[in-house]
Image (cartoon, rainbow, N blue to C red; front, side, top):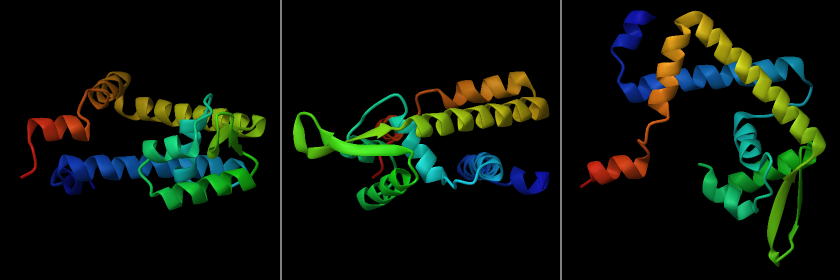
Length: 152
C-alpha cells in the first residue's frame, strides 16, 4: 500500500485520504444510530448548525447542484433534523433551521469526528496532525490558485 501511495500526486492522495476519513465518520454514525445520514447531508447540516440560512444561501455554499441540495434538505426534513419555513422578509425565500433533534445528532457526530481525529493523532502523531491542519488552513482556494496561475 505504501508503494502505491508514493506514486500518486497530491490531488489523488488528498482525495483518497478524504474518502477514508469521511467513510470512517459515516460508518461510525451509522453503526451507532438507526437514522442514516449521508456525508452530503452532514455537509448541509454543517452549514445550518447555529444558523438559519435560506435554501439559496446553502446552495451557493455547497458543491452540489441546486436540485441535489433541495433533495438533501427534503430528506433532512423528513428525518426530523431540519425545518423549512418562509423567510420573514420574503415569501419567495425559504429559511432552514435545525431542530433540537438535529442539533443533538450534529453534536454527537462532531464528537465522533473528534474521536477519529484522536485516532489519527495516535497513528501519525500530534505534531503531524497539527502540521496537516495548518497546511490545510492556508489560503489555497481555487480563486487564489487561479489568480496565481490562470488557466489558458
